Image 1 (tube, rainbow, N blue to C red):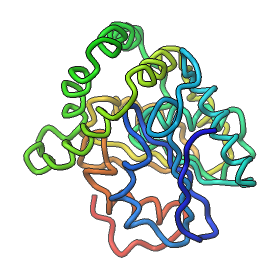
Image 2 (cartoon, one colour; image 1 turned 90 degrees about the vertical axis):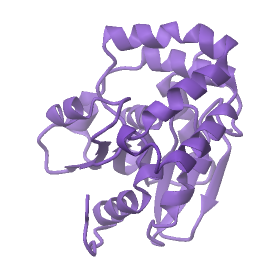
Image 3 (cartoon, helix red, strand yellow; image 1 turned 180 degrees about the vertical axis):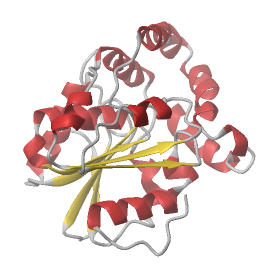
Length: 260
């Protein structure tokens, strides 16, 4: 079973799924600002953190099934599910397979759109370097995920992100990249899911095409979206604002003042 950590005694269960080359420790800053009405369930996805590699290819569906096993083990029936980046892809696969288990789905600096052919080829070209020169791959990639206009201010956060990335098992990372190549376009999920859908995106996100995501969001009353002045890592760049949005939208708390 996947490694997970539970925190809090709130009645509303918020499941947090990290992204590629991350683990459940990424939520430290944001969880300080989350409402005590939440109980947090922080999960390490396969091949990341303390969770083992499960297959040569970690498809989004495989990982969604493993998340469901954790919920079943804990006898949890309904959750708020939030996924960062790759965690958002897993959350979408979960929503497709187990829609009855969701109170809400939050795409946190992630996308429901499938990769174009160029992106798929880019991922495939990374296989060898992930296998043979993972540290170089991580050091080259991680800083690009932050707001390029604030790299000096974010230096400490970038260092933290890099440490977490370098602690990731390179073969676990490889299995997930192979899974991301196979992932499906899941716009249909957003068109049909009855649960609340929240999309939080970054204006300077180099990993997700924010403008394209917003342009393709279905016009439904259960979908709410925010664009923040940050890169791909709102949990490190804008943790208090992200937490306030989550509290407001998922718990219907009135914000003091939302400054984006």
